[in-house]
Amino acid sequence: MYQFFVPPSAIEGKRVHITGADVNHIRNVLRMKVGEELSVSNGCDGKEYRCGILELGEDEILCELRFIKEDSVELPCPVTLYQGLPKADKMELILQKAVELGAVRIVPVAMKRCVVKLDPKKAESKRTRWQTICEAAAKQSKRAIVPEVSALMPFAEALKEAASADVPLVPYEMAEDISYTRQVIRQIKPGQSISVMIGPEGGFDEEEIRQAEEAGMKKITLGKRILRTETAGMTMLSILMYELEASGEKE
Image 1 (cartoon, rainbow, N blue to C red):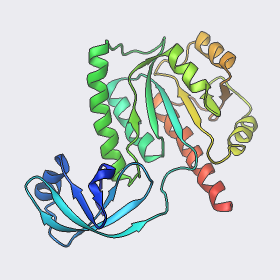
Image 2 (cartoon, rainbow, N blue to C red; image 1 turned 180 degrees about the vertical axis):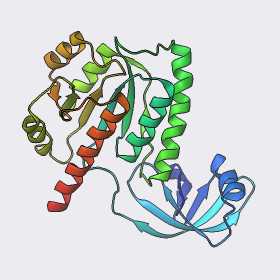
Image 3 (tube, rainbow, N blue to C red; image 1 turned 135 degrees about the horizontal axis):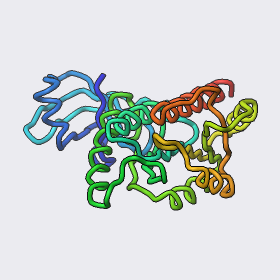
Image 4 (tube, one colour; image 1 turned 45 degrees about the vertical axis):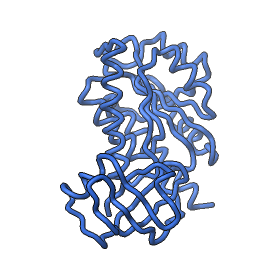
């Protein structure tokens, strides 16, 4: 079933109004017909609104609300990914997978070993493109929200923000003791905020890791192999998704 995002004001009782670019997509790309069902989220309350199409207008798709699915598809903890800025094609892949795996926010970070350097104007242009990718991934994976892509941050600012999370994590290739990693992850409680900081292609600079530890970030390992930057974030988010959702099922 196709999913679309609308502002809360678009849901009025039993009527749901879809406007903007989704109108053309529904009419001319998907070629949906009156009576067909689609799913709508307002990006705020975590609910899924199942609707049937009533009218296919030029500027608006009018739908009738059929029922509301209350079960949230979101993780029980908000996870923010702080990603050392990689090359463009890798960033797009990282964004897609981070959204699919449950991150609520992705922050590109300028680090010492980043190969790519962006000036403010180009960074903002990239962010607009990246946000569009996140919205498409959110629709595909039936997220209840569209995760936000933040503006490019310098390392110091990103570190300060990441360290303020309830559970601040920094996977590092030189870290050892996977039992400590397991312990940290399994002690996470529902509702706690989680930050994950991933280095770029060249990895973290030693000074950056030192600063991260001093700020209170928990240095953990993702295993004995060296992972690429686009793999590390996916791996960490996959582990968190499994542990958090499995923990919720036990409760």
